[in-house]
Image (cartoon, rainbow, N blue to C red; front, side):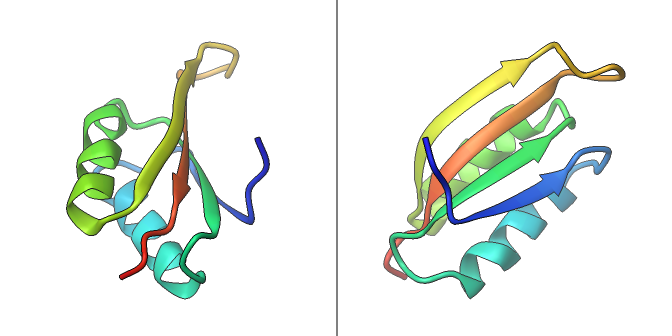
Length: 82
């Protein structure tokens, strides 16, 4: 899957991954796709909730255990119309 922009929120704790994604999405055009990478375990709950509340579409999410320190949570988000 391709994306238009990416936010690296590894090492940041709640609520910073969502706040960084929100800021970047607001700067993007509707329909653009953002990839968010976070290591905060709360992101698996926070990001889908944020997308639903803000009108964005969560296209994909996955967790990888390949990182040396903590599992990485990867989210692909399509910016909503608002």
